[in-house]
Structure formats: C-alpha cells, structure tokens
Image (cartoon, rainbow, N blue to C red):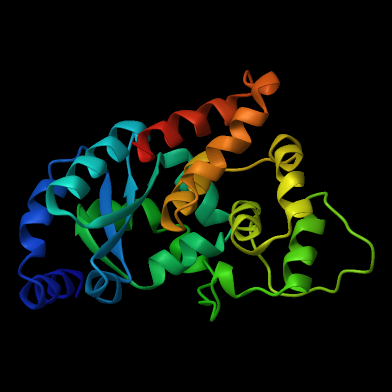
Length: 234
C-alpha cells in the first residue's frame, strides 16, 4: 500500500522524481512526505526525517530547496526525540503521520514505530496556528507561565512550540515580549520549534528571541536552537 501511494504520487507529479532522487541521498533512517499533494500544489514540500544528524539533514534540504526552487519545511529528528514525541502523542507528529507517504526505508519506519504508532491518538485539528483568537492564545500561554488579567477558559490545545509561533503570528506586543522568559522557563524541542519557525516564516523573530537571551547562551536547548536557526535562515 505504501509503495503504491508513492508510485501514484510520482506519476501525478513527475517533477517530484528528481527531487526524490536527491532526497534519497540524505543519510537517514527514513523520510516521510506529509500532506503531499496539497503542499506540492503550493510548490511546497513538508518532510519528517529521522536522522542521526539533524543539522546536516537540514543543510542538505536547504541545498535541494534552492536547486529546485521549492519550499521545503523539514522536521529532522533523531531517534530519541522521535520516540519521545510519538509516545507523548505530540499533535504535530500525529498529524504528520496521519497523511504521509513513506519515501525511503519503509521497513525501518514500521520497525521503529510498531510499539508506538498504534497507540498514537490520530485526531487531526481543523485549525492552524493563525486561526486562534485572543482568548485561545491567552489560555495556551497561561499553561506555560504567562498570565494576564482575567480568567482563562480551557480551549484549543497547543504545544509549547506552537504557542511560541502562534504568539509571533497573532499575539499582542506584551505577549511577544514575554516569550523571551518563557523560552528559559519551559522545556521544548529545538528541532520542532525550528521546523515551525521556517514553516510560518518566523526564523528572524526566533533568532531575535535567542539573542535577547544571550546571558543564558550556555543553556543546551538555546544553543541547539541557535545552531538550527543558522542553518534554516541562510
């Protein structure tokens, strides 16, 4: 079934075959293309790549992006982070796995996910980060330590990484100012935040937040995020 999906997609989009040829040269455990047809119609590719070297993988994707003049948004994860995110039912990962085509190493993908993928709760959301209203954003920010006057009512759930990007997209000046401290106080996945920053064209804003935390530059998460941003912002 997975192979037939891949063949069908290439037949409908013959220009993708050259891109695939270059993607297959990337050293990875597997490569998935997510929401393939919708994104390709918009001259865009969204990838989930399991790799031992996310920085090198993103660098290679940048080269392919420039070579074919197509936007490539790649979530590059190592095995440890992928396992952690799938076991925690991370909504972003769940949605990527729901509508995907396995481009490389199909057997390896199923072997690595056999104990988690069947337990993952696949419930695609009907909204994007830019669709939230003021109250919904306030609720999510309150979960991570930022509160304003008034009581927040439970609403649409975002991850911390999504809350950061959503604030940059639709938040108030005061909320955006608070992001500097939230990055220090909360645990986050640097690869996931970098992926969302590129997807929503917020690389510059994320780099600004990192620069405002220079006094905390020894924190591993910020260092890793900075290295990722340097790659995807070139």
